[in-house]
Amino acid sequence: MVDLGGGDGTLLLEVARKLGPWRDGVQAVLVDRQMLVSERTREGLEAFRWAFEAATSDVLEWLARAPRHENTAMIANLFLHHFDDAPLRALLQHVSNQAELFVACEPRRDRLTLQASRLVGWIGCNAVTRHDAPISVRAGFTGREISALWPAGGDWRTKEGPTGPFSHYFVAWREARAPR
Image (tube, one colour):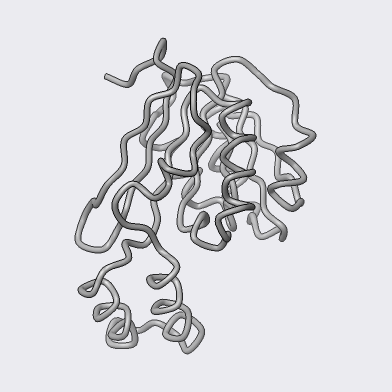
């Protein structure tokens, strides 16, 4: 399990909680430019017997040199919208070469989400988040924009669209390993 741009690791820990101990032996890698993972998050992952590695690196550089392993799943949460099309296409190419499954959740780019992003101060968000939220929505996704950047050919299938009130999802999986 690889978390691209995983920040402090709380999403990866939540995935471990959802999957539970029946997934004993998972090797988890969190890739981010900054080391933000707390000891508590590390201990939480280890409690599920997940081998954990925090890779402090640029994601594109890490993907370019990372070895391919069977049954690799990769996730990205509120991360892809930080890339312009060309580097995002390169990132997705690397992911398609190394993973069996890729799941991403991003801001949805639409009028309602943009309006809501201007109200995040009302729920206690700080000045940085109040500034960043509308920018992230404008950089977000709609339609099948991520699918259009996914490498053509091969045995991949993709699914993409709105989810929840403000989010956009993208899932890619190898045909032989279709999700149930």
